[in-house]
Structure formats: C-alpha cells, structure tokens
Length: 490
Ligand code: GLU
Image (cartoon, rainbow, N blue to C red; front, side, top):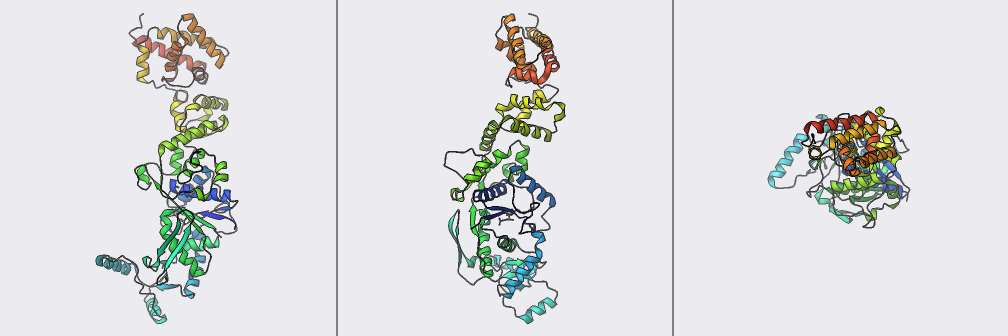
C-alpha cells in the first residue's frame, strides 16, 4: 500500500507545539515510507478561520523544514486543499448518505435543541439529540420546510453495537454507539461538520494513515461509522499521546510561549525544534537523543511512538538547541545568528560579511539560543558599553589598572597589523614589560572592552571592536578608574 498522510490544521491561530509535532510525525512517516505528505487546510469555520493564520502556519511549517508534497501552493491531483473550496463536494456526498437512508434532515432549531439539552441536563440525563426528526415522513418534512425551516443533515446511527479499531499507537480501541448521538454532517447553512468533511477528504485524498493528537480519539468512532455508511475502506489511525506541561496538565498557553513562531523569536533553531518535538512521544533506542531532520526521515517509525503522555521540558529544548548550534558548520551558524539579529532590528550592513563570521566564531561556543548571541555579543553589537557593576567594583580594588589600560590602548593604536596574533603579542609583551602576569592585564582589559568578566577570547574581542573602538574603551575605562579607584594616586 502506498503511504499518503496529511496534516490538517484549522487556521484559527498560530501553529502550536502540539500541531507542529503532529505535522512532523506525518512528514517523517511519509518520508520514511517513501510516501506523500499532504497539507489540507480545514477552514470550514468562516468565523474563526483567517488568512493570516494560514500564512502563519505555512511559514512555520516551512521554517521547520516540513515541506509538503501536495497542498496549498504545492498543488496536486487531489485538490482543492482548502476545505472552504470543497463545499459542493460535501453537499453531494451528504445527499448520497440521505439517498442511502444513512442521513436524514433535521428541522430542530438551535433554540429547541438548547432547551431540550437543558431539560435532559436537569433530569440528570447526558444531553444528546433525541432523534425526533429521524422518523419524519415525507409529508411532515414538507410541512416543516414550508414553515421556512432550513434543515441540517444528521447521520442515522446504528441502534446499537460497538465501533472498534486497531490503533497503531494505542492498540485496540472500542466505543459503544450508545454513547454517540445522531451527529450533524451538514449544518443548515450547508457547511459540513469537521467529522464529515474530514472523512470525505481523507477518502478523496486517498489517505492511508491518519496520524493525529489523541484529543481526536472520540471523533474516530463517528468517522469510522461514516466510512461504513459509504462502504469505504477506512485509513489506519494512529493517535499520538498528548503533551503535558511541566505541572502535569495538558500543555497550553498558560505554560508560556507555545507557538512555533514564538520559539523562533526566542532564538531556537529549526533543527533543534524538530529534534525536540520528535522526542515528545517518540524514542529511537532509549539512548540517542540528538538527530537531524535527515536522520529522522530515515529512522522514524510509528512503532516507536509511545502511548504515554509526553512532558514538555523547556530546559531540554535549550539543551537540544545548544547541542545543535554547536554542531553546525560556522557558515550555517553565522547565517542563523545574523538572520536572528536582523529580525531583532540590528543593521547587518554596519559590518562586512567577514566581520559577522568572526563575531559568530567568537561568541559561538556558548550559545544555547540565538538570543544569547545578542546578550553575549552585546559588547560588539552596541555602541554604548554596559558595565557589570560587580566586575567594575573589582577593578577599582586593584592597583595600577588605569595606567596599564592606558598603556595597552597605546599599544593597540601602534599595532599596524591588528590580527589575533599581533594583538596577542602586543598584550603579552606589555605585561612582560610591566612585570605582571598576562592574565592580570587581560582580565582588566576584558572588563574594559566588554563590560563583563565572562566574554569571548580577548584578542577576538579586540579584533571585532577594531582599533579605534577598542582603544577608546580602554582609555575610557582608564580615565574612569583614575577618577574612582582608591588606588588611583599610587
Ligand atoms: N482540523 C483538525 C484539527 O486541527 C484536524 C484533525 C485531524 O487531523 O483529523 O484539529
């Protein structure tokens, strides 16, 4: 059987972590089985669906690298891929069910339904449709229609029995049909319900496996009954476990940033996001945790998706992000760092491309997120230097700092070569002349140039700042030291 899977987002907001994981599992399952990954936009709710959300979801999927084979913009033989463009088809299919006696018109108004639900509730019954329009004869229907009532179409459930399936993730699942009601397939305004449109489309798009969150498990019996009513072969179902926040409740906005775009803006990179997402429910050998998308395209299998809920752990995401950043070739890391900084409003044109590579090389080993590039690299990105008060206080307690920094500034100004090697020679040479440890001079210079005790390698810092700025910062620190330090006169 050829594998065809789909990701079917409703465009009512951002692409969130849960949806992104569902998209990823579908994508990987398609790739691992040389199948087709379809993207279908479930925009039948005209009130809640927005174009902005479609654009956002598509761009988040692209950012993650989850390219779809069929769908919006990609096209394909099973389109249209927006449900809002498939309305005529749902109408035709619903009419087939009515003709086969598997669906019937229901004339009850929303007010009537609400009132009956309240009564059932008051009696302690579980609220469900009482089936009163199911037995209407043609005459009764015509009379109700003559009153101007537009009917919805309801599915005629079998009286009793069970619906069961062998879930790829959860094993055998079964529901008694008694817990269901004659659900609506087409609303009175002609719009299909999710369950109905989903079956018509999964069948029409020849979907072989439905991989989705287990919050949809209670929809599956209705969908299976619809397949039966049409006489269609249903796809295989794989319901992946829910994602919990660190407090053990279902992951939601309450747990902080939850959309893929928000994580991008926090400085997480696609490779890490994909790696982190796949581990929310899937494990390879219980040991290996770092994977690239290409590796996952080969290794992923539904058999290794567990049925237990997965816990979203931000520290883990940070760790995975740091590991991926570390493994990237410098060129690629530079691209990600500069893209991120540009989005944060930094003007890349201030420096030649080579400078940005040197910047990334200098700060690159410590990055957990791209946002760290902005804070760790602030000394080179900002004109004004912010000095850590504790680091500065420590300099004031040391004797001789001001004149030494002044002398170092003069050496830098005289260094025509201004390379990492020449800067190191100049600095170590000065320390030797002053008969102090090179480390002592260097730590003072580090605070003067970066405002911090922890910073990239000193000579890289000097090179990034350039002669003028580096010398100016050293002289500025020297002057401030002379004005503030109790050792200034000595
Ligand atoms: N539009 C549904 C959702 O976003 C799709 C569910 C499904 O995959 O069947 O939850």
